[in-house]
Image 1 (cartoon, helix red, strand yellow):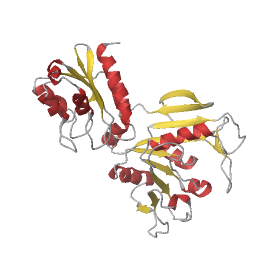
Image 2 (image 1 turned 90 degrees about the vertical axis):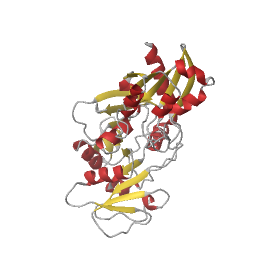
Image 3 (image 1 turned 45 degrees about the vertical axis):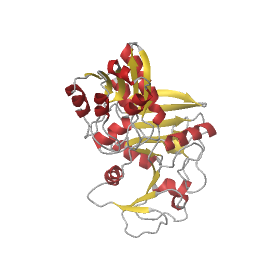
Image 4 (image 1 turned 180 degrees about the vertical axis):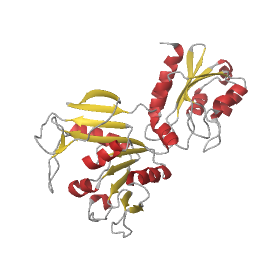
Length: 347
């Protein structure tokens, strides 16, 4: 492994410590190397606090050694004033002569300006070390800032013979997850800003859509109810977690929920993308039934699909959604169940 790649892998490793805390900022890690030895490390801990470069520089005991060091950072140092001063200016002020960057920042207020500022100040700047991996690390941030919509993950469990549930008008859904894979789903919920189901799922399953079996914040709950036929007694409307109801009706009969109207000039999904973007929700997880999931797939509105494949067969029921086109695919095993993972190659 090349030396630069070795230190950039460490940046990525450090950055992941900020998971669930940095949004809407990206996860970033930084490593400072002098004479072939790491003398400082840091990562962006949470939104509003010091960036990775700042924490790495603070960790260096002998600040004079910075003048003959290289700083490795997974994302281009910022060049604008936000909640914190520009990191590019700090690097210049500390006279760090060499900067190695994983990938450019897609955020419009940076977008190459940090690199330009460093070069104009006389710094040697290398860009693109483990670029693919660094972009994958901040795929949510990239999608949000380039496509102006949240990063969308579709998730469902299906039987060995390809069904997601039995046909029913009441009663409990088919149990296709075990206790441990259900816990993994709650981990995924904790990693998303919003979670969505359709009208039928809300009515039949009465889900809470909360993080009960993992540590983390509950995502914003989103439910479609175009005719406002869902009962106000459902758990979604218990007031414990903010909930959005997407509807075409002006009448408001759901307690403890915010109603969002969409008109005839756009589809529900188009309006939802605008709504979540305006609310700065970078990630959306869809756990609905076949109809809702397939509507996202058919519209091309997805970035990852996670399918939990149970060993149990149902024999009949509601067929699983169908994934179209050529996409990156991998298969893993978690707690006795196969997990199929699709990802669009658009980062």
